[in-house]
Image (tube, rainbow, N blue to C red):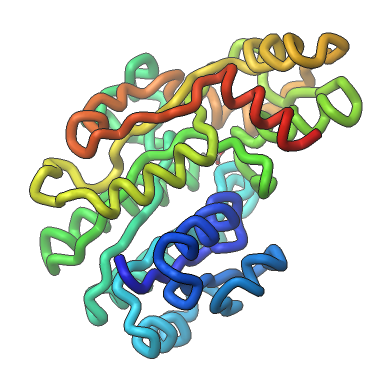
Length: 312
Ligand code: SER
């Protein structure tokens, strides 16, 4: 990685990944692409920024070629809950965006990072200790684009030698950018509500267990897999990675230890509950630990402490 382009740079991951990569590789070597969301002023001021729809293949290739980009971190996509409200649009953005990135990478010889998700699994997948290689029959449009993306990335590596790599992210928790349109967003919103109102109304049932990760671990994962020795990788795309797995009830209990007045109630949203119910409760990430030494730093208690400290 020397010259890196990040799509979806204004999103939850991109807002933290862009400065981290700029620190490491130099501001002028990290090209941020955003579209709908207004960029954080620092993102705009600290290095090159372009506003572009990811479906604009020509526009994207012009930027890649002009700056001799060698790595594309492709984060632009619609998340799970939004994708259920506009499935055709989600297919268009998520799949045509990825196809453009892969084709450009084939022509311009770039490496590609593609984030898959716990959503690449479905109701027939074993939901406890979900293995790396198992049944993947997702029943959400977001999940369908993620499993298709994993396959397409494998295909571009095998057929054209494009250096594709990727992980299956769980729900990501951060205080720098609010996620938009995901099913796991409650685990971020709850902190704002706890600090402002000491109360949160959760849209998932109290016992809905899902894998989660604090953002610094997610950023470290992207850097680590992109810098790992590919000869040691038996898998390339869709590595299971997780850092913790909890229910809304357990997260609320942990927050209550630091904000004793905090209370939580539940008004279940059937759409997001159905999505969550189709996902694993806990993934087995031992293959990532073995192949590229994945090792998260934050557990539930450490994450809650840092989220509350940072937001208050
Ligand atoms: N956080 C994502 C979502 O909820 C899962 O990849 O859609």
